[in-house]
Image (cartoon, rainbow, N blue to C red):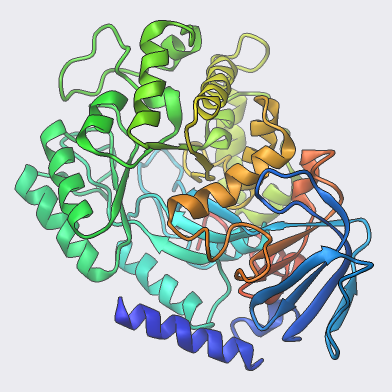
Length: 470
């Protein structure tokens, strides 16, 4: 941890001096240390209404001032960017990200995207990313160091250790725990290597989950889970901090559920559930009472519908031809239309997430670039915002979920997550007004990470045809 802190300090010093490495310099929108973004709309991430005609001053990596353009002057010597018609939001805090992607061809292997994915995340406004599970944890840790040292572009990374999985893993890239002792040993080993969170997976037993949670908490580390063999209320009782995907993966209501066993796919059952029944209401209340956060990953589930979302040219431009064919083939085989099972399940998940928040729960979001390949790094983070609005949240509420809420869970809200003077200058400049039309969240022009301004278009162009290969 001391080494990682030193790297961050060194990187901050280098960037503040304007000495950018060859791996970063080509993607800069400007290298000015002090910048005034004038006449801009601000959505600050707190859930407050958008403020028009504002000036945001970025000074050596920090937000120095935010206020009305008429009364917030640009500092002497600052580079002034007139951004009338543009919106500034906080950098997205992606809480279910990966640096791997489906290999395709029917083989359950997930190649590491160490080159393309950090650039895709940053280009789309993700300035902080938690890798919610890793198949190459050493690689992820080294990429984090390279980014922190200013040697390659990408978001600030919070690295989750290897999956905590039980017997029955669907990919050989996951270690299968042999019992509670192995769970404790795994947590301690990877915490020593620099992992800052852990993720329990589908076939873990209750005993192994409890042992892993207790070991992680002793190290001050949180545990999330994409569960199946263990129900949500069981996990909450064991002390889990976060649950991924929401109701779509909770098996506790499955009529044939056996202890420590993952039942068959239950999404069709979920689609028929009545969320107003007492057991579901009690489950939501139990999660809120135990301070268990939920991570929304709507885009990865939507991708299994045959008609949704519309295929974007930018997706086809970013991925390899093989990756595009694999996704489009999977999409063509899926049923679309009003009776699509994927659409019905998605709508139920939207209903669940809205109810969870209204009950007082902390909802975050992330891309989860797995599934059939349709949820691509960064692009899916943006799509999640659109889907949250479809589910009943206002645009400013959706932006809060994708920014401040993640920072709050990480214990970093005093440092980043909102557009507030004194905080780190992690900002996204958007051409348009996502408060009026959330789809304009895609129109990213400039991304500030720690005050360094990156050109989104240049980052996207650098990965053209690469995602899915490296």
